[in-house]
Structures are given as structure tokens and as C-alpha cells.
Length: 383
Image (tube, rainbow, N blue to C red; front, side, top):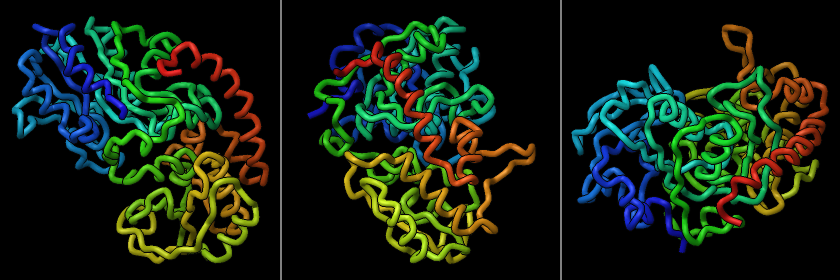
């Protein structure tokens, strides 16, 4: 059984912060093995003085959609102030930290660099460094294991809140390990300590831990979603639905101009290890193609251990682009920039896909992963 950093902190780690004012960065994923929220556990603990809450994307209780700004508020249950870290500011201000001495970070990451929680942590680290606050990170599992890595490192000209730092698409690190990496490699040099888990092995996927899976967003309902996410998240940067507004986000991929049977056959003929495509038809309830019938495919994981999720996703984008060159598009914003490039961490992949040479991106990423693997080795807490 895996014991979370939260449980260990409440059992004995709290002693290091007795008598100090505590701010908690958390949301609906911050629960213990019995599904008790860390907010409640901190509030009820006789030796913990909780004075403020901090909310990432999706809000403190998980009721905000992706990309929706979160407002600061008062928590109805505890009466504590909730400061938004996904609204007017993404880094805590000096005023937001005025009533705390120590920040505690307790969020469940999903193991992919596109996910904003890890950059919320980076901004919290920066604020703690600037304003002299301590930070304690309560470690949680990487749900897609801590062994495999996929992708390239984010290039400087495409950094954003879905790729703020040069780490790969699938990084193979826990949130605590990432915190050490951020501090030592990227100069987020705050007063940092990590409360490690007990019993977690790098080979474990989340469903190996005997813990309950709490969706870290409405669009990551199950562990399989997180496994495919490093690849299928790239569809967000195109005019093809990535399945938001359906029962299978990041598994159902389609658009009104796609013929599912044809796409499934061509994709399966490429024999991507660990995954099979099945033709589907769906109607998104919001976002892209809302209310329209979309043809497409569902990606089914045949073998998670042989699956290279990024290759599976990139190949799917390339296949759709080749089959539907007159309808498929990469989405541009008002400034002529491509969100796809921010997700990919490079402008090269978009060009490779249009040229039918996407495998070059995978090959080039392997070289970058070799360098990252040597760097991250210094910060691994579980061997």
C-alpha cells in the first residue's frame, strides 16, 4: 500500500511547522487514502494553524472548466480566504502571502508537462523565494509511472503555461521530484522541503497503488486518459475535437469531416505498438464542434507498457492531416501564433506533420531525452 506525503505529514511532519501560519495549495485531488480532503484534515488538526487556501486551475473544489479563470473567494466550509492562482495572477503576491509563514503544496499531477499544476508549483516556489516563505511539497504518485519518458524539451521561444520549463512531454517524475529539479536546475531557489511517499515504486501506474483515482480535471476521468494524454493532448491545437464534452475525452478524437472507418483502418495499418483505433461517432456537448456529429476514432490501450503515447498521438494527427488536407487545420490565435507549437514545445513538429515526416520529431526527442535523463537522475527520490 502506498502512503502519501499527506498522511506522513499529518502523522509526524507537522511538527516542523507547529506554531506557524499555514497556507495550503490544493483542490479536490488533495485527499488521503480514505478520501478525506486535506483542507478538512488540516482544519481539524490540533497542531496545524491553517490561515489561507490557494486554488489552481479548476478551482479549490474542482468546479471550473479548463482555461476558465478562477476568482478569489471565501471558502464556504472553513471561512478561509481562497486566493486564486489561475485568474488575475498565477503567482502569489506579497499581499496573498501576508498571513502565512509556510505554504504546503498538495496536488495530484498527471505526469505530462502540459498540465498547469506543476507550473503553479513553480510560481509558488518563485513567490516563496521572493517573500521569504517556506514551502513543503507533499508528494503524490506519477499516475503514468516514474520510469518512461517521452518527447522533447520545450524551446525558449514557445514557453507558456502549458510548457513553462524545458522538461519532456512525459517526464516520469513525481511532483516532489519536479520541485527539487525546479529549484536546482531552473533557479526557483526557495526554502523547500519534500515529504516523500512510502511504498511507491517507479514502475507503478496509479491503479497499482490501491489509492482512489480523483479526476484532476473533468476531462481526465480515468487513468487510461492520463496514459494517452501526452499524445492526444496535441489535438487541442487543431480543429479536430480531442473529445472534450464527451464521455471519453482524449480517447475519442474526431471532427464532422472525418470518416471513422477510414481513419481507423489507415491508423491501425501503421501498427503503432500498444494501441488500436476503433471507429466512433459522437456529438460534443461543448467546445469544438458542439452539437455536431463527429466521425472519428477511439484509441484503446492494448498494452500500456509498450505504448509510446506521444508517438500514438503524433501519428494520429499526421494521419488526419494527410487524409483531410483541405479540412484539417492548426489553430491560430489573434496574434498569428499556434497553440499546437506551445503544446509541442517546438515549431518543428507542425512542419514535420505537414510534410509527412513526424517520426523525425520522435527521433530528435530521443536525443534530448538522453540529456534530460542524466539531469533528472540527481533528483529522483524513489529508485
